[in-house]
Amino acid sequence: MARIIAGVASSHVPAIGAAIDNKQTEEPYWKRVFSGFEKSKEWMAKAKPDVAIVVYNDHASAFSVEIVPTFALGCAAEFPPADEGWGPRPVPVVKGHPELASHIAQSVILDEFDLTICNKMEVDHGLTVPMNLLFGSPKEWPCPVIPLAVNVVLYPPPTAHRCYMLGKAIRKAVESYPEDLRVVVFGTGGMSHQISGPRAGLINSKFDKAFLDNLTKDPKKLTRISHLEFMREAGAEGIEMVMWLIMRGALDDKVEETYRFYTVPASNTAVGHIILEPKPRAVEKARKAAGKSKRPAAKLKRAAARAKTSVRRSK
Image 1 (cartoon, rainbow, N blue to C red):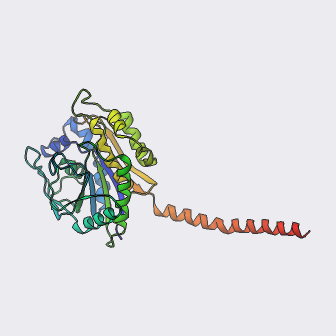
Image 2 (tube, rainbow, N blue to C red):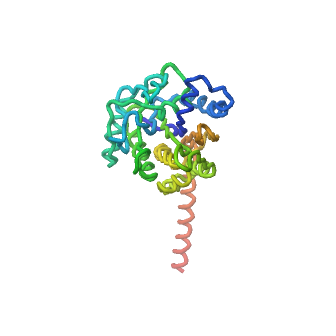
Image 3 (spheres, one colour):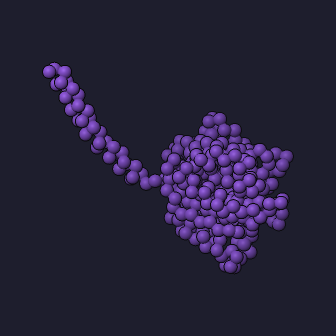
């Protein structure tokens, strides 16, 4: 069966994409950002996923304010880079995995999550920038991608809890797919930032770092963050972090933090990144074995106690 081998979260700042495209990654301002993803690219090269599910938000490329689906799943065979006003980014066409995507759509909809199914869709920097940060700049992306676009642009966006539960439904869908596939789930966007209004330029490192901490150890606490709290603490665009909770919901309850990176600012945005993996199965097996080894001893103690009681009664 297919299985989710890891979750990855990353900011998708458009200026990061521009720095890559314009070969500015070694400039002092940008070098500190890109150096933070070097270990992640090494990890991804070793992980070799067969499919990536990338949760992101569209920036008026595939959708406009006329039609904004809450959750839109890409089921096409390919997704071309969108023209965001200055021409499409010079990145490879994103190849899809229609079979797995269709399976996920069916499973998740039957679990009562109302997805919009997209059989034709362009993808913008929200998806391609995290791909660059984790896969580099190859001539072809190394694995097929299933895009999941989430509305965090037009009010009301989905709640943190709803996103977390969608992640659990996606995991159930992936694990019921018969083909042996290694799947990585990306959560993108954030972290704290606001691009307009009186609080433009807001960054809240304390909130961001607490979010990263709880993403690993207490994700359910994050599901209780309201829209208003996200906006107050992380800026108007901080709501993008609900997409990280879809990724987190798709993982085991207990995970190991493989790597973390955080830096500010990058184009008035806090750049955050984390890699989460399931705890080693060997540890779980050892715990189960230990539990089984304790059971006979416990049974013997209970039997001895019952024997003593019966002896007392007979006296």
